[in-house]
Amino acid sequence: MTLLAVAAKDLRLALRDWGALLFTMVVPIIVTSIVALGVSGGDSGPVLFLPVVNGDQGPVAEVLLEALAEHARIEEVDLERATEIVRVERGAAAALVLPEHLSKRYLADEPSELQLLTDPAKGTELAMIRATLLLADREAASLADPFSEELLEVREQSLTGSNLTVSSFAQTIPGFSLMFVLMGVLFGVAFGLDDERTSGTLLRLRAAPAGTASWLGGKLLARYAIGVFQIALLFGFGHLVFDLSLGASLFAFAICCAAIVYSMTGFSLLVASVLTTREQIIPAGLTVIMVVCSLGGCWWPLFQAPLFLQRLAHAFLTAWSMDGLQDLIARDAGLLQIAPTLGVLVGYGTVSLALGVWITRRRLEG
Image (cartoon, rainbow, N blue to C red; front, side):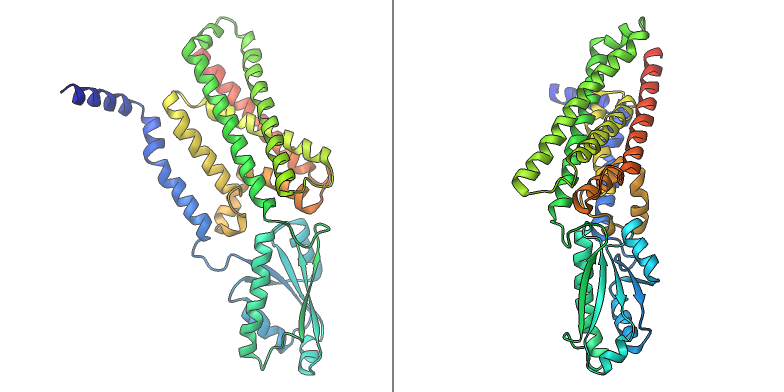
């Protein structure tokens, strides 16, 4: 009987905290759905996007494009627009340029060179495009008599950096480093605030509102310093052990990391300020981390997700953080090139910080 009585009491206590119960029972279903969609890419058709500059407009080009369309979303554009999509908008991993007189040369058994304008930073997507080109070439051989590998050669030209290929570590190390730093900062801030609540510090601060900013600022500064050290340690380890590039400018890389941790610190305060019990911190914190990291491109390249999730990604600081790191690591960008991304990260952190302070003050006054 004692056992049942204790179990009933604990169940009643658990049911009182609807917030914790919601995060424990319902949110995992949402997170699982997001991960499933991200991995599968959805059922909306080919996820690869390949702009094509068709300078030939002949039968050989037509057959090749028909074969490519079976595996990728093809859009015919001019050379200027293709370059803009790959280099400026980062909307595709590559653009294919079909030269003039391709059909005429092919039918005369003369070789032709196809040009692939690439963004090597999107290594996984670029590898899939290369494989798609090879597959389309073979499929086209059965439609047009016959495609010869010797007559069609692909030459790659990088539009975003000096390297034609980028290691897969450029995706995995930054992505999981961001996840673990965010985890450390968010839980550090959330548990720190909860410890002060349970110890009565927050009640004493009601009588000294001028001290709230100093007290809260000191706690956040400590977590910011730990986060900066952690991200430096993770990327330093990745550089030494896995030969991960830190970009052309170590100073720009350090500034980017500092801006990333700043945005994480403000975001963590905002999340922590709305969690009212210790029981909510772990399930809610893990939920937030998994959602923003999966949607933000930390776990897999964004192109693998359905289009609506790709559009949603930049509502989160993780997507902007990955953009800045990818620009430095894989595209040889400098401080000026990543300045807009840094501005967004600093703005994201500042707005989150302001909202978190406002909510915390309201709770002190309540």
